[in-house]
Image (cartoon, rainbow, N blue to C red; front, side, top):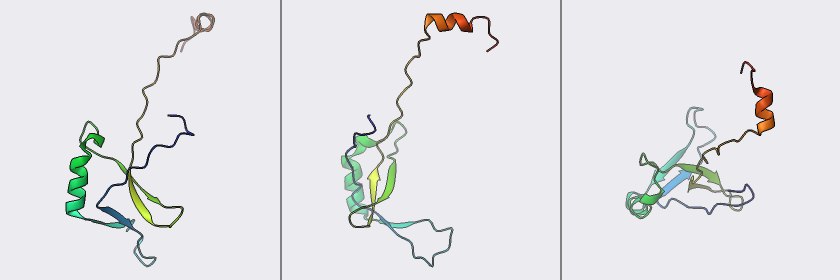
Length: 99
């Protein structure tokens, strides 16, 4: 995907992320809530988003407009590297080199 292209946002219904209080201990990084019926329904409807190990990756973000946190499916996939073809003239330069 071209970096300028924006992937569609897929919100996870029933999975809520909240800010922690400023007075929370430093080892508390976040908090949230799960609405079991909503999340179960969402998971059932979105099984196809799971990877080969059965996981759906997510990212917690903050809205630019409202400042509220939200949970979004992370749809990023690593693209396999394409075979690199070495130009014949460059290959000849490398011939006999120790690397």
